[in-house]
Image (tube, rainbow, N blue to C red):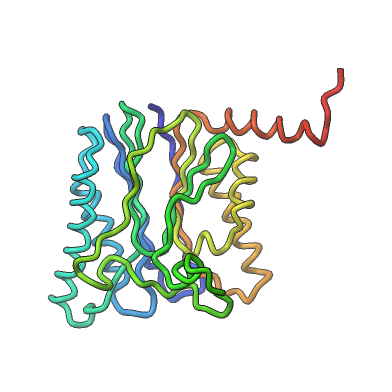
Length: 264
């Protein structure tokens, strides 16, 4: 299975960038991680780095996908953060979001885990699917059918290092991958700066994951210039399976044909 990827991490209007990204691509499996230190509390950068490093160090790309092992990796990351909280009083409330994608290259399967409001999107046959659900107050209220106007969208009820020690991250089922799938792992600073339509339409206009991230970054910067200029840090990893550009082109042409009929 051919995997191509690109990653980016940019400091917005904050004093520091607490985002962390990373990947491991082995012969049999691959791992991709994005973490965002919880803002407003000391040690968010430490928590994000601990989580990323713990998962990537434990991941073995020479083995096939193992959902139980992945759960242990994430739990180990949470445990490492809590141990550091106890060892350093200044970091006793630190935490980090996490979104991680694991791919079995031989069996063509995907599995993911997340905590907080960093997200994973799947683009299949030209369409977008948001496959994670934020651990946030706004999301809880939406799920309960309550209005969310005026609610701080950054208020999390769970992230690694936060909340009940017994609480676990959220995990997907094992999902078959199709040739042409494109995955996007990103922090809230990234997805807040774009609409789902921006994400989907930009994929129709590029040939590589690096071009895709660059195009979306331009939209984020444009929106930031037109607003108050208070853009959060924003980071993302784009993972393409096979040749998404071929699938996307076919989809785009079929859409265009509705508006520009082909001549004989």
